[in-house]
Image (tube, rainbow, N blue to C red; front, side):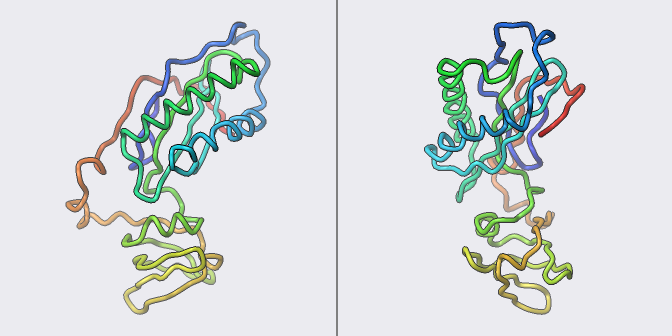
Length: 208
């Protein structure tokens, strides 16, 4: 199993699932259609746990498929929360298969993680959850680096070396959190955890 995104955490919610027919005899899966189906199942489950579904991808890795779910919340996502969400999602997928049949032929593995620091800041909630952090973005085509001091659904306030700017969210390019080594000492043990479980075969991977 691959590690989660940088700064994120990954857990396996259940052993690989195996459909009734041999994987080699199964047709190639439309990963886009499978992703849409999974998205409809997983989104309400994650919301019921009090988190946002940030991303869901489906890839073919060797002889199996991998479903990666990324969740986030206003107060971050602890390891215990990741495990709880993973169990809830796994249960929901089991119920969907019992009701509608196999989600995918052959084996597939579920991975649940929190976003890494390299996740681009795009939506208002992304900016709000990074108040206090140094970010790099583009405003009117110009690259700007500043600290997020305020953020709401309409605008983000950045404190740069020269100015304090209040910019509408729609005018901001994707933001990138900048790693500040001088601030690493402020991280607690939970923030520093890199949790990985299991092994993963990465050959022939196609992601949708």
